[in-house]
Length: 173
Image 1 (cartoon, helix red, strand yellow):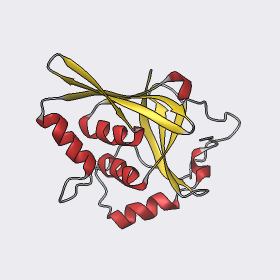
Image 2: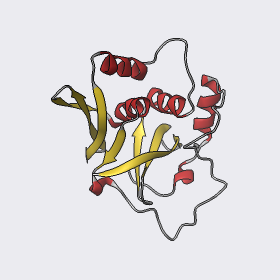
Image 3: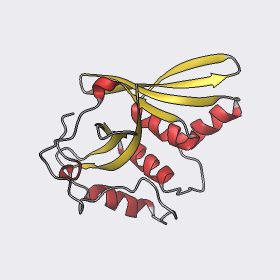
């Protein structure tokens, strides 16, 4: 397993699906995963430290894990079968280890909330096309920010919808 971080989020205009791009922490290899809009919004909200008046589902999961005395140690994206990615969350409580089958998008959103590491199977990572120059003007989601932007849900949706597949290089689902 290789540790990865969330590098970018965007919309695949060919099918209007949201894409989260994971990049290996100590390298350049990437893993694009197509996800749903609620999960994309949840990931963006956490990365930008945007709070809602009521907890979202991933916030609720965090509260349940912490409330039961558990710790999310890591998330592992283990495989892809028929264009479906699989992940598991490794929860620790006392001396027990529980591996929970989960979608990668939910696992990522929860891991970000709990500060857990995200790992991907080595075989899932791909090298970006080395011939293609990276476009510095391409919109990307900032990984770190000194101050959280005050984005409304509608502004966030417009931002994500404005991104193009070309913004991420060439990937095959």
